Image (cartoon, rainbow, N blue to C red; front, side, top):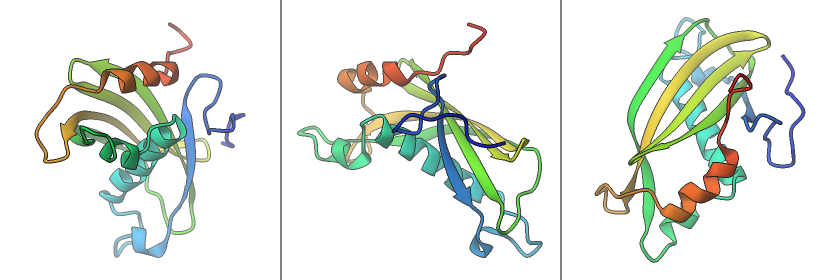
Length: 153
């Protein structure tokens, strides 16, 4: 699979965000396959870049008068195939929206046409000291323009 046509912020026409990730030796275990926990790192890069390319950086959240951050409350990953050293992976991130305090993402790791791993991630917003907080209203409104909607919808 090659990347679909992307705008200058790495979003395709369906509001899916894409990044490339090269697998390095350090990403693998003794079998030469990507260690399972490293897919979480790849997905983290995808979500961080999605937010940054949507105009919301982690640093900008911390620089607010009322500093904020994200933390994950749920991660579900299905591992389909093994990735190996030198593979070029594509990480697709879909922002699914908010449900109360929850911010939901769907992510897929591809190698060519093959699905390597799929994840459903739920995050919540917290104060800089770790206490939970409601998502920032302006942030939710801003992200609405980047919400993925299924072509079947």
